[in-house]
Image (cartoon, rainbow, N blue to C red; front, side):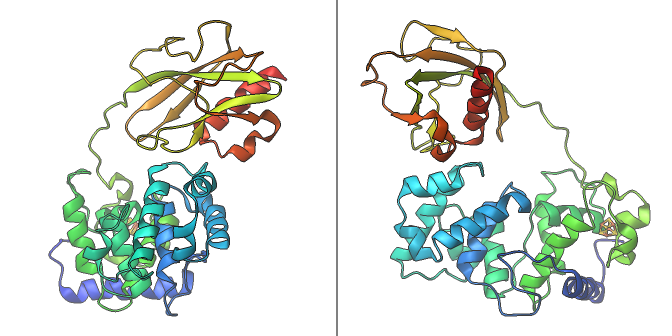
Length: 354
Ligand code: SF4
């Protein structure tokens, strides 16, 4: 199929996808059934922020918890930072939670209504091109080209786009825009997302049961899995650090990470700065009495991999006044809302101690 396909064909693709969606839409807590009035913008916005780089299965319990605790944007705007950060713990990419609160407060200040224009939505904290388009289409039913990673894959196959990602993004976006219909834009966006996650999967796409297989250039070529073409990945740099597990009387010392930066504002086990080489005890909160623990934890962030070694120190007397933090009962550590990497380290240390 040439990318210069006639308008009628584009309309046919949209109709086939909408018909398929009417029969096969996934039932998700933030959605309305196909063809019914759209869900409230608050629920669409919250789900889209949570779904950034995160799976549907991981998001569902967090979405339920957030909407039960903070049922609308005003309620969320009034929530204390620490409560929201703790509720977000484990979902990752914590800058999203800080932006979520900043955005909720901005909307509450402006009267409590989400704007229905992409350009205005994009001025709000944490809302980029994709999220603005998704809210416009899904919550307000207005035409917008919505392209997430699933849609990117479907479009690159449908049109057999040979240019590698990420350079191909503007072209893929223009093609998404071309096949987006004027009516039912929200359902169309969700149909594309569903097709990408259930039929046009990264491996072994189910072309035989795909509603648009007759229009698909990659299917005609018989090499769907070759798309999207990706530029070779550069290996991620590795950074290193040390986790200081400090114990006293069945309690462990926790700190609050600085507001700015990775895992900002989250409760954490103390670490020094993360460096290019293992820092050992260079940034230890006190000089002596450290015991090296076996193993370590590794975590992959967007731009680097982090490897942390573990050491344990015990404090018998109160000498933590200048360390900045709090004692937390070890048997209630799961209530501290530690980010995944620190929760993993804690589990490993406690397993070794038992
Ligand atoms: Fe994807 Fe296959 Fe459908 Fe093409 S025919 S859109 S490759 S599932």
